Image (cartoon, rainbow, N blue to C red; front, side, top):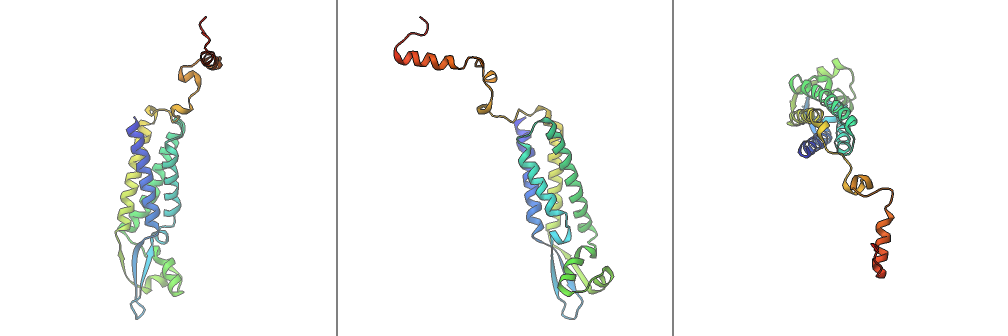
Length: 195
């Protein structure tokens, strides 16, 4: 099940990274009916305020997933599904409905005009960039990774490497580890430890 674990971890990391990158990119170009037909670029973080923190959380889940025990694997799988659901629902709403409210903060910052109705009357056009669609696809990948984690977590190998196994796990008698050292010292002096 090493492949399942690697796939889940990499998919979570990729989805989180895409979300963080997308939050800094332009999602919506807003054209204002202010005589000059001014265009304002609305970033992903402005259009969907939960995008950055939840994408960072997905990155953290992916990074920690490779070292946690079985109980936390299940918890991380559930959290991954929740993050994918929240970000995916918000992104889908922007992608398919493109509400003016998603641009209100950017328009207010550029013009000083506030209020949903006032902003809506000022906006003459909205056009989406590909970033909302890319982000929605990333959330599908995150959800798939979370489901894969939930389905296969029980069969994953332990997170501890051989370097950190105890003496008993390594097959050495834990109560007398000094015997091997004593025997080596005897051999280096020319003594026969079996005599």
